[in-house]
View 1 (cartoon, rainbow, N blue to C red):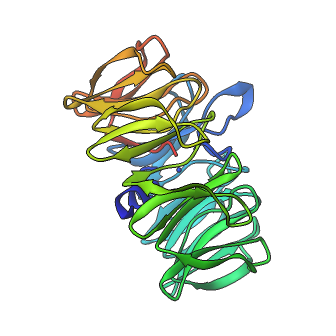
View 2: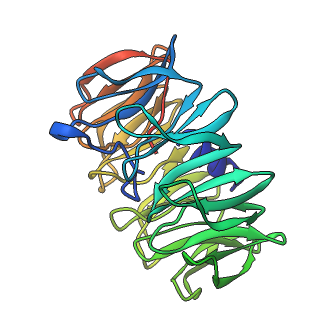
Length: 298
């Protein structure tokens, strides 16, 4: 599942954990986008809230956003001012009050002041969600609480974040789901998966992706070349070389017409068409015309 984890790091996981497109004043979403001037942040009208000047930028969450300046990562507030100086090799957004950062080859967690709450000690890690974070130690993945104590011992080949009370883990080359006690709710049986959102999760079985419920039963049969999770009632799926959006019945509500397409947040979704990114509404119409080189929407 390394490809998904890399996508989760580079694009992208949300979003799902109150991270996706955090709202600012007057309920205006703030999303990082890339232009000739670098990375900056726009609101839902397409106007810059923070002018483009960063080497890389990720989403705002809990009033902070990780940005890359001169080879290192730090954090800014919504005015664009640096509140945690660039000092980390990698940095993720804040979730559950902590942010995941990498320094000297190890991952740890800082608070909003930039102080380490859990010292850098892990080979790999993901953000906190629902009071748990997946971390890799001595070649295996387990889950820690916010004190850094293992609550589910490292025994999995791979692991993703908790969502809706369960988390995807890999064992014996297959993916299943566990609860917060580490017990399987869905036995390992899928080739790939993601996390639950709105009661369903995308999974790959054989060569195709479909969607299962929390009993592990397919509610949308495997038929897509790739699929993301549901958000605001819709999910982006890839088939026949293009991305479109389906509802929970598996029917297209926005026809496949995009080179790339991410999930909806606050009624808008970033899509790539004609080699640039813009934002559409749930009718599939552009609200912000494609003019950005890249976007970040996890």
